[in-house]
Image (cartoon, rainbow, N blue to C red):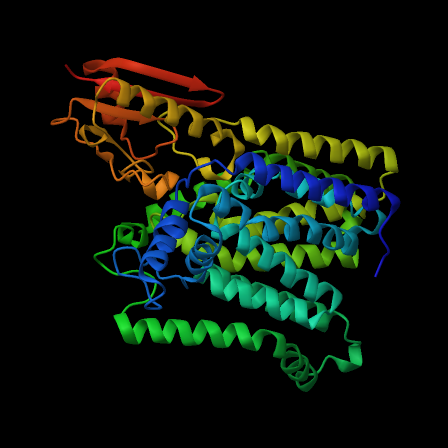
Length: 477
C-alpha cells in the first residue's frame, strides 16, 4: 500500500471536519424527493408499530430491503424523532465516504491520490445526496467500502460493504455483482500466461466468493421471503410507482439512450468526459497502463450492469440510480490523467479544470419545461427556506394547505417531510377544481399544458425565488 502523502495527511481531517459541518448545516433540511418515501415513510411505519413486522405495507413498499427505514426508526427511538437526529444518523456514512475516497484514489494514482476525494465530493450527484437523509448515501459508502476491500484485498471490508449494499436496495444488490466481476478481473489479470487455464479461472472465482456469500444469502432470503409473503418482487400493479416499470418500445429505448448520455454528462460530468477524450486523443498509450485498464474495467462493468433497467423501463432515469457508474467514470478520468505522460503543471491544470467544471454543475438549471433531478445537486438547497416562507404566508392568509393543489414532492402531510407533527398538507393538483396551485421548478410533474394554463389563466399571488429555485402560488379567483 502506498503511504499517505503530506498533503493527504492534512487534507483528510479538513474534509472530515467539513463533513461534520455539512451535517450540522443540513440538519434542519426536511425530507426531500424520494427520501420522503424511502426514509421518512418507512421509518414512521417501524417507529409507530415498534418493529412489529419485517415487511412494509404495500402502500409504501418499494420492493427494497427495509433496513434503512429500520435504522432511522431505531435512531428516533434512541435519540428522539427530529430532523436533526435523522441527519446526524447519516454522519458515520458521510465520514466513511470522505475517508475511503483517499485510499481508493491512492491505489490508482499514488501520490496524486488526494485529488480524487476533492473531485468525488464536488460531483453533484454525490454531494447533492450527502445533504439528504438518503439510502443512496449508504449505497455510496457500501460501494466504496467494498471497492476498498477489493483493491487492498481486505476481506472484512469487502464482506461488510457487500452486506450493506444488499441490505439497502435492489440496486445495491446489483452493485455487489459489479464488485464481484471487478474482483474477478483483478484476480485474472494477475495470472501468468501459463496459469490462464479454465481450471485456474474456476479456482480463482471460487476463491473470490467467500466475502460475497453473506450479502448473496441476505439478498436471496429477503427476495424469496418477500415473494412468498406478498407474491411480488420489485413492484406490484397497484403501487403508485408501477408506471415507472412500464416497458418501453424501440422508440422509448432510443429516447432513454439519449437520456442516459445526458445523465452521464449532466451537472458538470461533461468536463470529465471531455478530458478523458483529450487523454485518448493526445496520450493514447496511457490506456496500456494497468491502473487505467483497471479503472476502465470498473467503469465498463458498472455501465453494463446499471443501465439495462435505465434503458428498458419508462421511469427509472434518475441520476442517483447511476451513482456507482458516475463515480467509476470520474475515477477513470482521474486515473487516466495521473498516469499520462503530461508533466505535473499540465496535470494540475487539467484537474483544476475538472474540479471547476464539477462545481459549476451545482449551478446548472434547466427551463421549466425540462425535468431535472433536483435531489442530485446542491442547487435545491434554497427550496427548504422558500417552502417554509410560503407555508407561513398561507397560514397568515388563512388558506388551508389542503385547499392548495401541487405536485410531487409536496403532496401529503407535512409531518412526513419536516417531522413537525402537522398532519395538514397540500393536495394533488387539479386546475379545474382548485382555487390555489403551488408550483416550483423542483416539481417535474407539471405538464407543459398545465404550465401554459397557469401562465395564461391564473394570477400570481405570491412568488419567492432564491438561486435557481422558484416557488409560485397561483390563484384563480
